[in-house]
Length: 338
Image 1 (tube, helix red, strand yellow):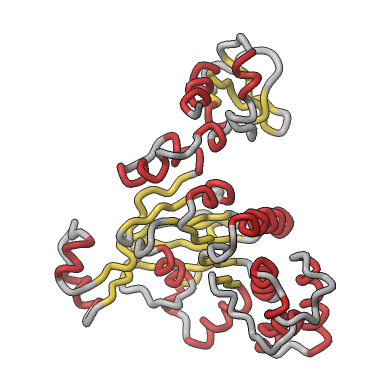
Image 2: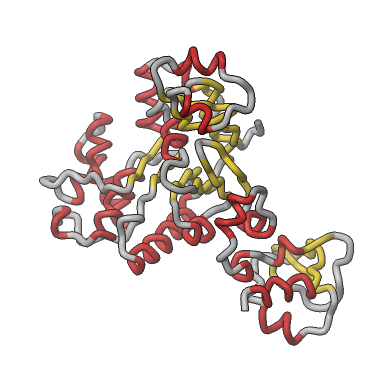
């Protein structure tokens, strides 16, 4: 675990059933999800090891019942794990007292869920200030902070509105503002945009990316939408039957799926818009001539790739050459999408 690791999850299990701790002690190695279910138990989280770095956006995705929400609830100890360890900033959360756990959640963690959970008889301002009120902050200070985050999420001028007077996207912004009011270091979001129509959902993704660029939070974001995951994630963890099938960058997920299950997730994805020049760059030959930006996607570079005659095109990050991109390999990805 590095100094930048905020959440460290090692061999974590969450088993539901009559005697989960006793069952885990006798569980044979390699017992499958279906085997466990046949024994009368459910493996909500199955031997998961994963770290989340400071400032990272880790997106956890999978189909319904894959374990993604259960895993995130284990990260915040809304569920007690059955086995393994989970540490948050070096603290073993299973060793915390109830009081210490409440303090950790109040001071370090923000949570946003699919259901907005707004208080219908409170204004936008009072909804956003509510967690600060629960913390015991004085009225003037919590009003000032609430107004600050309301402006941050683009709802300035609607402080006195009630939830019923807001659109779905605006209500979700109130939920996001409320979670931000406590200035959390760690932000958990469980399918926060899935109830929104596609246009508003896209707008909320844009807003979320803007906020993350400004605030640099450590984020664990749950979705079942692969396009959303590709757009938002620094890394994606794909879950199936309580286990993590693969955890990697979006580029690597689509270029090198680790399992057949992951491959099925990626088979309809346009790789050209996901794969970036920096991922294709190698140090064996930097090429010559003007470089391309490491952050540019193959799709962004389509015209250049078709017209250029260089076999190896230099790739630069922050003005420095980081390697060379094989033009033929990039063209193959581009043509695969057409």
